[in-house]
Length: 392
Ligand code: SF4
Ligand code: SF4
Image (cartoon, rainbow, N blue to C red; front, side, top):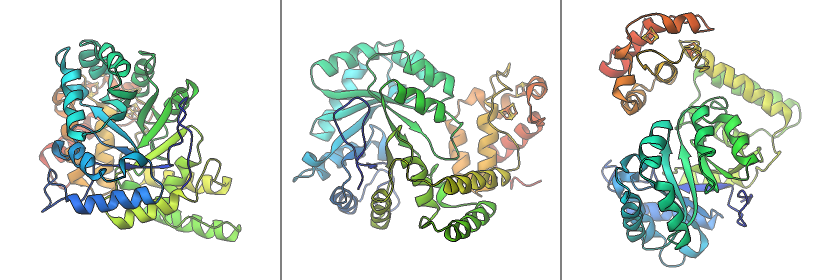
């Protein structure tokens, strides 16, 4: 295991963190963690050097924190730092912060080293965090020792990241979705560099984009295979798999403090620990970077809508979340993952879904790719909300 730096803190996190959100469960029930099997994964991860464990109030239907507290008993607790998260979107009163935090401390039965405001976006920041003085409450929790360090996790566009990052001096770390396909998406590389430049540790989530990068599309697979052959003939030892490649791309970057993996099997733990032991800052040869760039292009070409996510089409007068919807449609087709895309579609605010489009055409005038946006939105609505075969 390699150990890295964590912003301004005197703490060397393991390159790999253990995410307690995709643990083995009983009878397929998401809120029934298979406690012993899950503990086995955690023990193996810690034996492999993992020293950062991440959970949240709502993971596994609210059972992950209690499981973690139990699983860490008997000697493991001293070997790891615990990160957990406030369900920011549920904060509706000023005393909600303390109510949730106290409940979380009780569930865990141990202290919280790192506390995050979970899944901030511009709306949650304004309507929940600022409106109910969450920052004041966090300052008091830091002062009285109920939490060790304070940060946030984030899902929104870059501009919102900048706003939130600049909105408090309390931040010591943040957690962003980042991988080689999301370099210019959400906080992206710009956000990573901005936060690291301000001395924050940046924890990376979704390193495999929800598992998509472990399942290359046909075109991406072709690019990987060609890349492997090139690297071998150039005398490099290529990575074992697309998974290792995706993780190495992250570990190569000095601004990444650690990456979180929600591992579900012992095999995944063993594999990721092995990968983490042979990747560090600057580990990627330029030839490998070129292969990654070609694979990225191949992934993009696998998608039906040539949307780059530039957001020039926004704002829509009817508040339609155009790039998000086009991306979901693209993902559903490219990965044949209709179920996953439909679930993520429900995460969008209802008034921002495709049915709000009146086909006014304003966005199409602004789209540099010349995309017939209204037509694709109509298709996306029937595919993602109602469901047909999406073809045509
Ligand atoms: S065509 Fe639809 S999505 Fe585009 S600006 Fe008009 S209402 Fe919004
Ligand atoms: S302007 Fe066009 S390419 Fe850019 S995000 Fe909107 S639809 Fe996609």
